Length: 104
Image (spheres, rainbow, N blue to C red):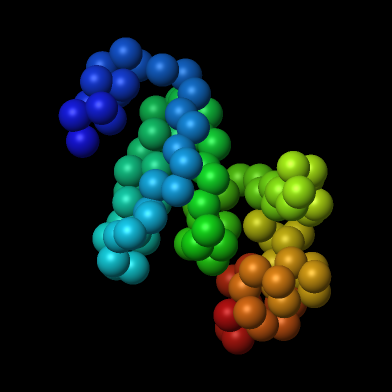
């Protein structure tokens, strides 16, 4: 917390968050992403999040990149990736359907 407070005082234009939800309870992880990470972006800063919780981070993303073996394997908007069978089956554990659909 102290390190994050110190960084926030510097008013950076870019935040790189590496696994910010690691070891957090699911409800706290979602709150962190939806409230705090969105707040950083709303303040005008660019935010790059490296995260394993694909569904949660996809919900707050403008653009998503999937890395594998040091290379970009997939990229797109959440809407584009939510209908990609490869992405959905690999990272969301289901079948592809548009973001915000009644089934999802």
